[in-house]
Length: 432
Image (tube, rainbow, N blue to C red; front, side, top):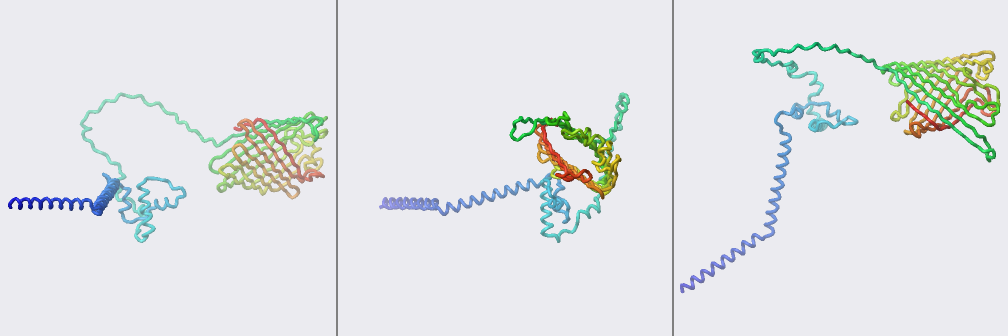
């Protein structure tokens, strides 16, 4: 009987242990409980990361010594100019990172709470610093040095005198360019459109000597020389004759009035080198000093500089000018508007000159000169246009267009008082 009780007790214990194990296993494998534990662990991880990031920011802000760049954040609210200057600048510059951040924070405060701003940076500058003795030089008293014996110094030779060389600025600038170009044309006798073979050559040089004291005074001088010849098989009188001929000097004395405006005195003188001839004609139509033009005028000049300095030059407005025309050959007097038997004619009038250069692209440029001179009795208008195509540094091609109006000359049944010249060439060129 006793064994029965013992056996029954053992069975009860075994059943209890088995039931407890099943309940514990069921609790541990409950999916809801596992998810709660996982979420809790994730929240702890996120919190730890936030704390680490805050500690990192604090470590960056915390320094061993006081950083004066943060002073404006904790001092009485003051309007500082640096933040506004950065906001209004067209090309803001990136400076110190901390200073930029402080300026941005203060600008936000100025815009949101202007009522808190009580002081201004200008007022602080008027008050000055708190201490004036910081600007005085501090000297340290060292008594041990007085107790030490002085170190003997070896005698040194006196330094050689240094010659002071004073170099005066050179306000003069010299530049120039020139070219030598040729043109050859061959046409057979039976060419269906006709024509004739010919050779032509043209040489030109432009020299400039300019003075500019970088203050008020300018003195510009330009000498232009151009001479060209051509041959013609149909011309039985001349072996060759000129097709381009110019000798011109332009001098301008300027006194700056305002920025690019100058009071100007201009002297313009021009003639030609050789005789002017026509095919199968023995007459001379022009020559050296026949005619010779001299123009002196006063007025205003405007310096042109545009398109990133690709368009440069000057515009001259001369309301008062004196004009002189001289011919050495009396037979050419009437052709140049001078009374018969006289060498000269003079008059007063006004003048306008535009002398420009446009660098269209690196290889193509356009030089233009528009000249207009008028009086009560006559009008003269010239418009020179030269297009230059740079093939290489020493090789270029030119196209020259030159319309002209002069009512002091002889009337032409076809062109009236209008004249026109055109030529093109290719050859050597050089600038310095």
